[in-house]
Length: 131
Image 1 (spheres, rainbow, N blue to C red):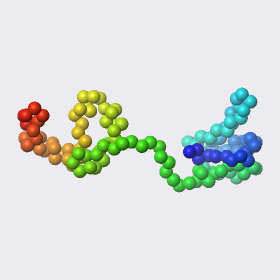
Image 2: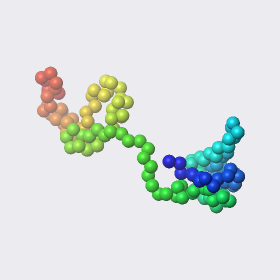
Image 3: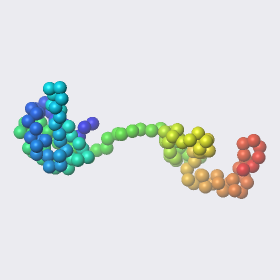
Image 4: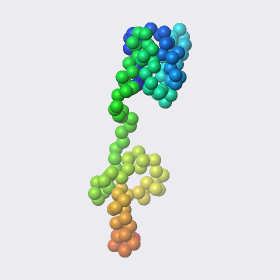
């Protein structure tokens, strides 16, 4: 969702663009059309655009909402022992194939326990030996 929004009252007068102290608004013309652009990274959220608009077209309230917007969602990989979140599936897929085969879904605590078991010779190795 775009935080800077204008409603149907906007008539393209560009008062908002001309008065924006942060230069977060810009108007571009192409093919007989005028497009109003907003750059959130530059925006100071000072509400000058909202105050200056003679038509009351700027809907500044969207920029003041204290909310979280969903950006991306990933499937979680959990510890095989306790179920604690360890990493995400896309992270696993991004690893080199050889590394991916070595990575076990274990939390920090259970990794340490596994390492201790390996060092003490208590963990059997695939193929019949002991690690």
